Amino acid sequence: MISEDQQQNYDIFRDCFSTVLIERITRQDDGGGSGSRHRRRSRKAKTTAKPDRSSVTAGQAGESPAGSLGSPEELAEFVDFTAEQTFEYLPEELKTVQHHDWAKDDEMQGRYPLPLTSADVGELMPVLDPAIEESLATYGITVRNPQGLVEVLAPVLTAFITALATPPPAPISTKQAAQEAGCEICGRDWVPLTYHHLIPRFVHDKVVKRGWHRAEDLQNVAWLCGACHRFVHRFAGHEELARHYYTVDLLMQEESVVKWADWVGRLRWKGR
Image (tube, rainbow, N blue to C red; front, side, top):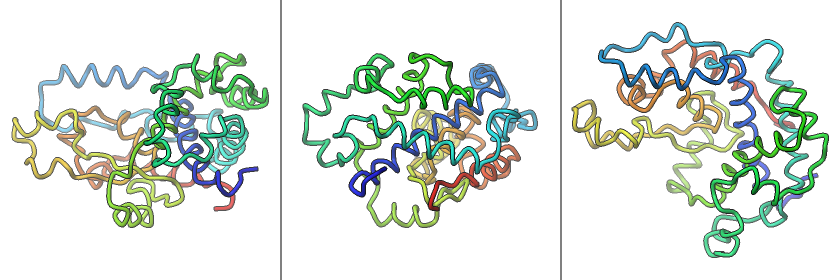
């Protein structure tokens, strides 16, 4: 049972947990290699034409891969149950720590060097309920051995601690307004949101130099949930996002993005 003083951190943990699980499950459908193939194609492309996205796979589009995801309701229940089980085994200080506590505690920061590895997770969470491993294996998220479990949890804990350690990126009124409106892709307003640079920061210098965008447009952002944020970066590389998908409206013109938004938007946690 999650106590009241742990609820805020649990909500963050569950979002990080679900984001990693959704990514792993959806990648099963395309073999996990489509992103690399796409990036290689992007580097070789010489044309400025908008790419044809009609061949995006079901996994990339967010459609439910047969035998893996099942219904969004079923997956949401699974994530809720498994995340709560796992959260109970976190170090006690991580269940309640707030950003201002983290920022002034150098010793605590030293105990959690980011990014965390599988070995780090094994030391931080030496004992885990075998039912967690069994649940993840049933969904095909990991193999049935302890090493597979910590490999899944390493990016979850890294994302969770990063979220705890990161100061608010914008005035609270702006973030509150965004949260009330919900994720700009899937519309969910019951999960934490972060901002996504519509023109990725990695290519800011390049897009200005080549005249693709004005400097004053570089800080345009969209507020997205963790799952949609990762989906966008799997959907297209930095340069392609900057050139062809630099607004939410442009992203939502793609059928695969619409299908993803419809599917993930139906993931609802208990009590919501």
